[in-house]
Image (tube, rainbow, N blue to C red; front, side):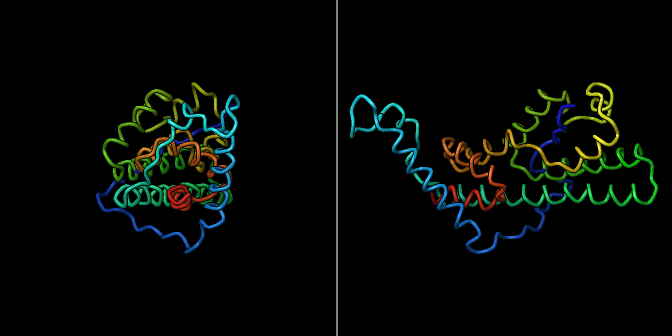
Length: 217
């Protein structure tokens, strides 16, 4: 069966920004070092094979040169912190579902409850997302699922033939890995950072740590 993907990123029911936890001081240090090393290796790869010692200008021209402004960095950090908090709340759905199953609640009832909670989180954090980015998320979800908030339980059970157990497991996975790096790179004013963000995410780092590491690499 195909892997269930989440409704999407950053979202709220209230207009109050949820309290976020700052990344521990220095938590992104190792990540920053890895990204700088990666940049060095990338620089070596940009040397033109036809002209040793000269940079491949065509490739280098695709890279931005200006560091993100303080305002851009602040916005990207806020978005990343919200995303980290969202993912924590999504994962908590799994723990609650496990407890329900242990208490004898039917798998279907647990699946419906978990899916409903996940949809509510989607609304909550999308409402906190800047309007332009929220519209990008809606467009992504409409294209993938035919619903701006993500897959409905009918879509999962009938069209994708997911079992109740699959739906429970999917409701506890954040997804959104296909669009979050793009949104963060755009917010930083450096679309070329998207690849770096995706690479860093592969190590399992928090989004907030990734933003700080990428911005200083």
